[in-house]
Amino acid sequence: MTAQVGHVAHVAPERDVGLQGCYAGFVTRLTAFAIDLAIAVTLFAFSAGVFEYIASALTGNQVILRDAPIVAAILLAAWWVFYCTYPLAQAGRTVGMTVVGLRVVRVDGSDLDGWHALLRVVVFPLSFALAGLGFVLIILRRDRRALHDLIAGSAVVYAWDARAARLRFLAKSSAE
Image 1 (spheres, rainbow, N blue to C red):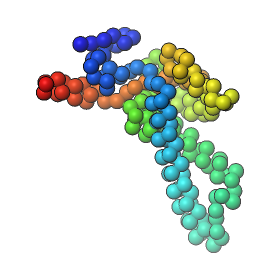
Image 2 (image 1 turned 30 degrees about the vertical axis):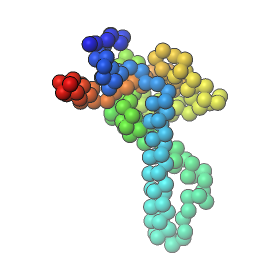
Image 3 (image 1 turned 60 degrees about the horizontal axis):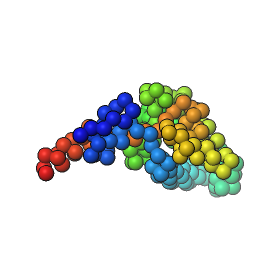
């Protein structure tokens, strides 16, 4: 049994296949963001510790990034931009998006390029402005695009290995 969603046919009984290509909702996007935030901050903290250790050993003075909060904030912001932009430009998804099965595409469905990935990441903080009203658009708009998606010309869709999901569905159907 198939159902039409937009212009793409989907197999209705299997969630993994049925949602493939549909716009992603708020909770799934928030989950991906939380995963990415945890990973990025953990990697930054580890790298900062390694940097402090090496810099202290080389200079003979104790180097602590906490003593330079502006430098630490700039480095963290630069790390966040790189952490998000590079995988978005290369694969259309971050680690968190991969875990929950999301992908960022251009509005026309084509792959996200480096420029639009960078633009999306740089304007992302605007969605937090005014008490997060940029994210309310995810709930209000049919295409589930937040403010940063509108500015960057991007959309977030469900996208996991549909072929594997279809094979699981067929295997489950034939076993019954």
